[in-house]
Image (tube, rainbow, N blue to C red; front, side, top):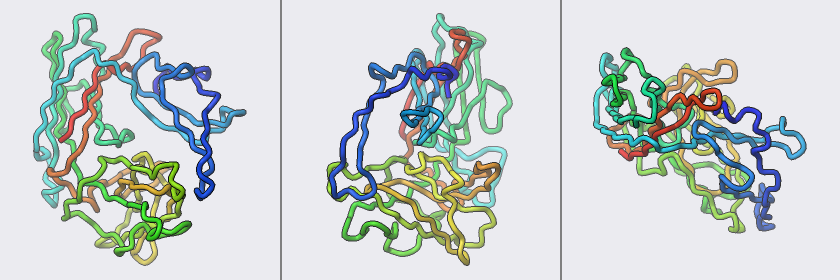
Length: 328
């Protein structure tokens, strides 16, 4: 989170507008919708920010939190992207070496200082917890940095894995997906899609049933998955319902090679996928995003590109001075 956010408890919304949901809605009673910035909450500087939903009487009691970006587009980013093969490494399956070669070029305005340019970050779809960072260094695996000694910069990555289209679960049909407990899919257990390109998705998003629909319930949906062979790492489900963060609490339960997990979800459509990893100190490490999902150049993704600058203001902080979103 942005260093500027520390000690800004006054930058908070205290009087929240709450709407009551229809009496027939199961699993929730109230609905809140707010847009920012507003009179109470202001974003005075760009950068990486976090929001917290806390108890009204105790700010230390956090119900939930999230991350977002605030950008200032001072610098125009020019991009080139093309299909590529990962250099310096040959995998056992050549599908694993399919990557995108992304070049980000810009000219820094004279009003800014070249040595304060920090780095470029690239986020695939909504996977902000796993942004790829291109540093201002000459020697990086499958990455590069070029500077002409003046105002011209180029950051390059040849390591963007396109992956696959995400899986989807659609819980809108109340006759098929009955309250309160249901299977996520009734067409059988899910399997690996390593050799199967998926159908178009929401690029990591979700679409909830309208809050005024009397059947917009919260269900317990059980996901079932069987890997093609014995897996020695843990298997997790990750998706729009986890904010695309691989979390220990979303580890699937293993029973004789068949894995399952039950998750509370509001009726709607959600993107998700399966990954492997290892839990260390309440974090999931060594995440493999491709093992069950494959890796295809044909996959359509959004890439968000952020240019960071070490601002000299307010004790120095990482300011975002350039932003561009591309679809590949």
